[in-house]
Image (cartoon, rainbow, N blue to C red; front, side, top):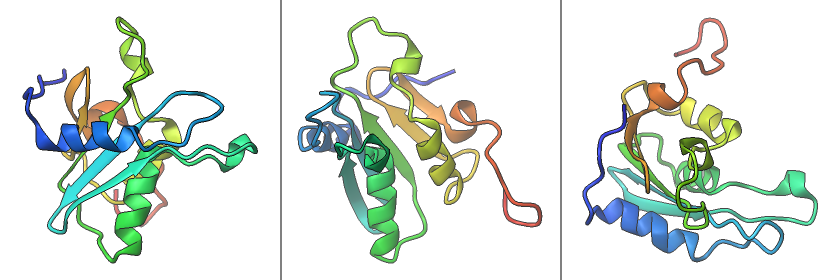
Amino acid sequence: MPQPLPADDALVAAARAAAQRAYVPYSRFRVGAALAGPFGVICGCNVENASFGMTICAERTAIVSAVAAGHRRFERIAIALPDSPPGAPPTAFMPCGACRQVMAEFVDAAFPVLIDGLGAFRFDEIFPWPFVLPGMRG
């Protein structure tokens, strides 16, 4: 069950600000992510492309940016979806499967995922069965 988010959570505010920078001329559905770790905060937003398969989500943008900067240890992530309609079901706020699988590469089951409008979850609550190669961490 999700835990309520503090109204003034700085990481959620950073994710909201990142969503405002999204490039979404096709879907008009902005998403922002703010990834926290010992390095501070790295933000990402979704960036669409006319070739829809080339679109990258906010969560993956933040994670890939952090990894490209040399970081591998993350403390929590906040995700903001300001264009999810009021009263939408929880599924309208969740990270997509690709983003969850990328997160699974770097985080453990207890990793906090803060979803603006829903609350705080443990990673294993939103992705209980990630793909893990035999013999690899998981």
